[in-house]
Image (cartoon, rainbow, N blue to C red; front, side, top):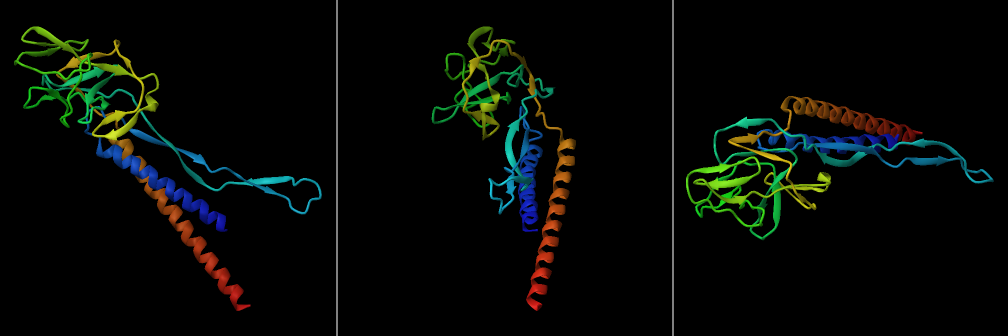
Length: 247
């Protein structure tokens, strides 16, 4: 009976973790280039039940499951839909590549969000103000109005080529870690020559808002059901204690 209580509690914790992931997906449904997360559940190691009082080595008579927990959170890197903006500083990557930006401390971060702008210092930056890097790991200065980017990421200003955007890809995208601000860190990369850029477009998130809402409702209902199970077990235990105490 008590083991049933533990199993239900584990299920509630699992659903809480799922709810957090789904809520984050919904919150980023309008974030350009955002990639949705999903959870993977795994069973706790089964507790083996052995027969006691055997003279020889104990024999297995079965197993007892003790619920489930989060086995991991993985990111779906499926490409989102492109939306036309006609803003020359909006760039979308058609392929598996990522833009590279530079944090104030000198660390590189990676993003699929190509909604860039020019700051007061004439640098090409992302929405958080992080400078965008070129293939020589240099920040990019834009002096002029006629700004174009070809599909290879070559930037031209007033008809003159000034830099090529650094686009990278990862042998193992699952090694990437989300760090906030729609950016990633923590993986070895290669220069990506296969992806193609589209100027005047942004990539929408790959979150399906309707599906996420349905999943959220399912998780909430599951949580409520497990909560009722715990209440029922608690009442049963209380009744058993009262009856034993009255004997």
